Image 1: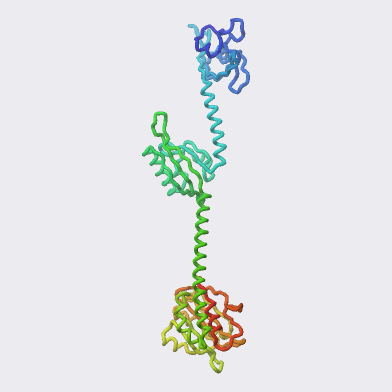
Image 2: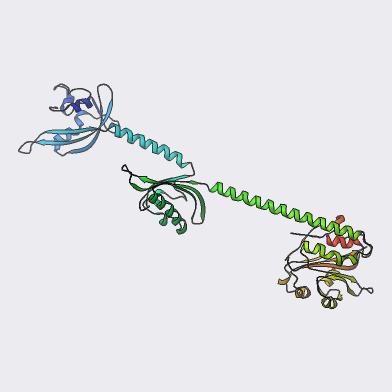
Length: 420
């Protein structure tokens, strides 16, 4: 039975020890006992009974006791056997502390951590602690699919690519050295996966205020950044389209002006040398050739040209059908557009390649189903032409119902061009 006790023991028991004939008096003075899992603990199975039986001490034994007023406390008991001079067990001493507050705090902390873990798991936030050597000591909701065991005890350099890891280390070292928080946006890469984070780092301090490491939170803003990048690309594309439309409108206005002058002239072929510089600079054109079918229909003869010297024009005065690009167009009566001329190797392109032309287009000039010539343009600055529709609903470059070298034929060929 309990023989000696102090006032603090009575405060914890909630009453003085029971009478000697009460079964509870054999090993303790508590109204009811429970194990840590909440199951009842019979008084005869109290750790004091075990010590009295085998003499082995029982340390840090957690027991839930219920006082007469119904209040339950968690105590931590340290029990040792008492022996006489011969070594025989004559009793036991039980020193116990009330750890109810600590247990409740631990339980509350565990529940809080569980709630925090559940909340953080469904959010794009990673939280972590690192020691002064910047080894991870705790992490929740790690990125890139890392499990905690893949991160704990390691540094950034052991986990991430070198450049990104060094950037993180610099930020964390600054927080430790300055004793103040830092915040920055960082880009992290791992095995081809690229992510953006809004990273906040704070120095981690112990109870004495000594900095022991860092604590941080990284918000994954990858979706937002990619949306912003997509928006910027969309805006850029829209501006490019607007610029192209403005350029096209300028081209159409220029072509309309040229066409008006051609339509108002009885000899439009004489206006080509005058008008060519006007639209050539805007459309990126450098040369033009206008051939007519000879009187006997055996070949093409040069009627007008621009962008080449007189000696070159003399060499090009006559072109046979099937010879060079213009001769091919006249023979087939089909428009030919050649991009990236300088990379071509056909014999037909040798002439225009020798002139330094990089983009070339040649149109047959038709009237009443009969060929009467060709009109071609070339550029040394552009590598391709975007050919637009001809006027009056006819096929591009194939004006219909024309008679002679009238202005509408020339206009149809000019309006087939638009800037890219």
